[in-house]
Image 1 (cartoon, rainbow, N blue to C red):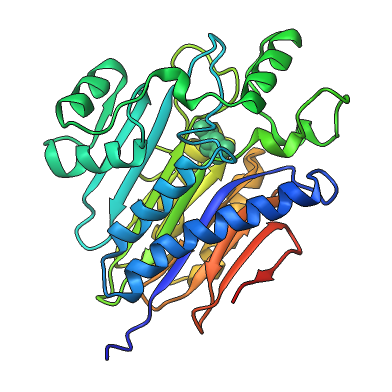
Image 2 (image 1 turned 90 degrees about the vertical axis):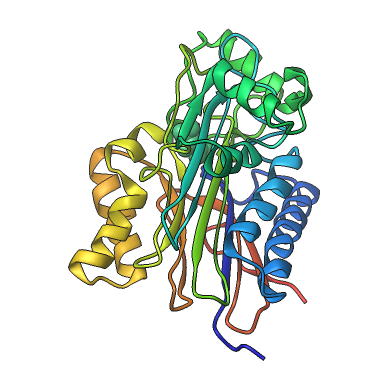
Length: 329
Ligand code: ASP
């Protein structure tokens, strides 16, 4: 039996998630959705599969869940449709694939992987990307398949308030009126990082972006080095938060660079970037990361982050708020 370490962590978005915001039923549904998504990847790792397959499997589960802002449940653009972004990266050779502003692929993370494996490019956008994914025969959906009532209400509420994109997690720190969706639901980009038995790491991230986004806005998620990065010489990282800041701080790559060039450990590198670099710019959000020695980090500067991870004994943990930790099995 191979006793090389494996590691896995996922996120379902960072934001103003404070106790009392979600009903007890919502909380347990979200914990369950996170646990199932973690399991999907972990099963692959335990069977000796690749970290790339594991992160894809977990992100597909999160995209299929209406709780998160990716795939089904993605936020609406200002025009009332959905434009999805996703990226995937393999640490063994830094192969990477990304899609931005796509409209019809059921699972954008599979689209990102198709770009990585079946094109000579790293990133495809908009209608050209739609066409490529259709040609590759990835399952397609009508754009309104991603709709959920919750996201529709957010879009409409935001339009009533002037239609500005929902950019600032910090501004959402109140419960709002009776008819408003809970603020915590405004976030929910998803991601996964994994280490397999062969010592290879991988990262995947998928999102609908930010509510009421305009002008084909693209955030950090599909940008290799900003929201997503994997390199066996350092770590695999997936980010969530206010994408404009994550782009300007090149968050995912900066964490890896600190490990490689300044010999920082994973925890120090993640904390320095999330609490110092990002915060100094005013950026809010978090990251999940694993390194080839099996270390796992889940670090955020917001009150909460939907997240799940596997501990050293293989037990799954799920959490929503900062102090949260639900152990399963
Ligand atoms: N980072 C994503 C974006 O800016 C949003 C999020 O993580 O919630 O598109």
